[in-house]
Length: 311
Image (cartoon, rainbow, N blue to C red):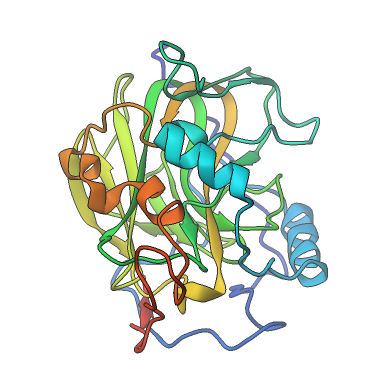
């Protein structure tokens, strides 16, 4: 069998489920326009049980989103000294995770990317960056957005690439629950706060091969989340999300299940999407740049008008 041919095709139990925005207990969501893509009730290859869905909803109700915070000075110094290599993936505290995470090395000549290898025993798990890639209290002056990439070496299971706001249930793939987005590479469907089967993303992305690179970017002006494939920018997946921007600290979120091998590049190495190498897209230029409304690089840049959220 080929590297990607042993994906398990299971239908999930959706009894009692409805769409979940995750905002009901906190605040009204921004207005959004209906998505043009069909919303799938069932996932194509791998979906969690109804019990895990209910548990995650309970988790979100009991654990409100953490407000944005200022980073301590030693972290800012580390970002300014090491750039994208300052970002790491946190080891998920759950026995569902089976594998290793080797974070980037600050020393010259050391690894510039985060290396992740999981075993066939690995269940659905979400790994989040230790630092936000989108920090609500920091300036966006002179910045277009933020961006990171994932190089797929092996995927005998599922890899999902996206974003999330803490706290997020570590047994749920990104995109399934509150304030989380994800592109699931088993069926190429996009998810934003979507506990069901997601929506088709784009016909420009039909399969993943070993050596492929998937990038994830976010534009400040529009609140748009998009992806790239092998250096080519794909259409916007979602727009108007994480707005107003100063309300959230958003982390990179990588979901995995099964035997997989991939590298996560936060900017310590050269991006395959060429524009991502420009300062306007570097995460260290945003988070390490200055405080919004303060005396940092950007001065005040709190959003005056919010774009509408849409799929």
